[in-house]
Image (cartoon, rainbow, N blue to C red; front, top):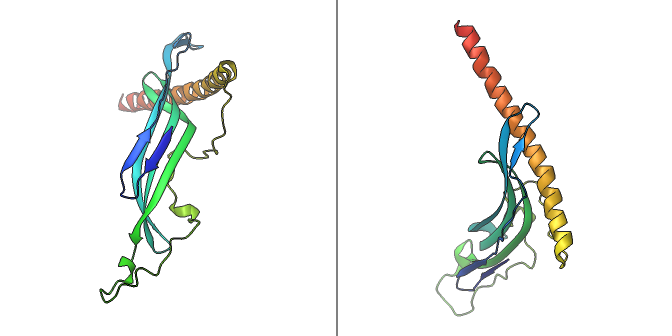
Length: 177
């Protein structure tokens, strides 16, 4: 995955999300109901404009997620990789150019940006990406473990929401009678 941006502002996003296949996507719950659990790779990309230290910034980002859906509704996601590239597009105050000289802009972009103005990921508690193993089995094990954990939690949240909504419908029906 990569994100690049030229000084002219041209942005290039590149991500290969791959495919994920699980042995059995239909799960039977303790009450006998069957739900479909899917693990989907999702790519999110875009450009955000921010102001920091008196400069306008063009920040491009590309994010790769594993999304977990239960019966077609995405219930959870996990960030696998993030990539960002940012350039300054000029001074926020117009550079102080009065048109009366050739001395140029006296502002120099800062070497470090404020954390508040860097591109944000949609996922809370995202962790810094670390290199994955280059052999297939540890990566597959990692994905399978994450899928099992997230699918279980996602299914529990989905069922709790369905039970709550079902109870509200039952209460409404009882109050009308």
